[in-house]
Image 1 (cartoon, rainbow over the protein chains, first blue to last red):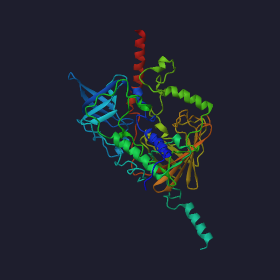
Image 2 (cartoon, chains in turn green, purple):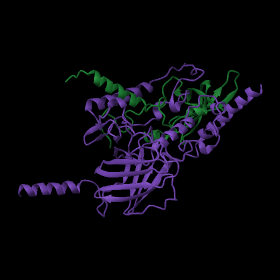
Image 3 (spheres, rainbow over the protein chains, first blue to last red):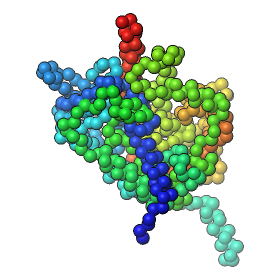
Image 4 (cartoon, rainbow over the protein chains, first blue to last red):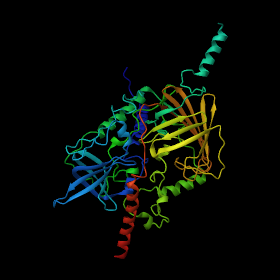
Length: 150
Length: 346
């Protein structure tokens, strides 16, 4: 049976939508630390290069890549990601992101001017996300709205 | 069998709930790993008023929105994209104008949770509007003081400009306990043990005399002494002092003796939490809690959440060893202060 949503239902949907979105990064107040304290909004970056090391650690993963500057000089940069534990549970391993793999990172440099950045968007060279979202990968609910936990 | 006997038999069966797993001494066996990730928030969206539950259609809608958001954020980016805008990307909260990281790292569940067959709009059930109760005068004072320290750091040393002393970055011990890897953020380790953005796994290990509650994030472990007595009030702990007792098939845990920094945001050393763990079947338990901190809130507040069992494993956390962000945060503050000094001496 097709239901027509009343204006009250739309209000409800909007309120719930807002609560869902309040739980995603960029809009949440609950995280290990405030990124704004670590990285400088006045130092935007785009980094490209091969992965040289992945530190698969808590509270935050660090991906190291080698960036070749316009003059040919090479620099190692460290990019901050999230906690690895959830990804480990989804079957991703230490070597899922391979050494030598070309990546593209956009983010902001650390306030202390060291070669560190937040991994605001980390992708493969062709723009693909190197790890996909949680849907269908062993996340608690694979079917929307249905409790299918083990 | 007369009607009376049938009814009596039915009551005995339901009181015993023989289907739940039990320990050799007949207590409900709570042990196992639970994944409490959920899209249901602690505090209800205000627009829902006193509505405690969602219809199936609404719950599916919530789940679909979350799935659509995850799908959208998992799409490829432009490989030839430019650096983000100078001056910040406008993001709010913890992402503080620079953004955080790809949403792949987030694991906050993909649906709401159900209790008594109904999807819930919030964890909080009392007050009936799903909101925390009003703050006391002292609670308001503390919240205002905290707000100064929790102010987003948008790239200027506002604490120097405004003469805030000590400034929020003057001492490592002034930083939030989660940032320092001392406790999970969002009261994940509790008490009360609440769902958060990721790392929502809990493990219960149970013996006749002791129940251990392990929270994955920051490896917070609470050891509950069954039929124990509270320690003297001058012994204070990060996770409080917890004693438990069995009320029929429900484990009731009473926690006091917190230090000045309980995991629950805003709470103080006068925090008192009562938690109840009740096995519903071999796949889940019902976790309910009542929070009372007369320093902060004008009355106690309560909530509940389903803890579904999972076959997934808890991983070690080792937060301190990898906490490079902390030095980055402190050095970043020194850099901002140096910039101000440089300007002043020009």
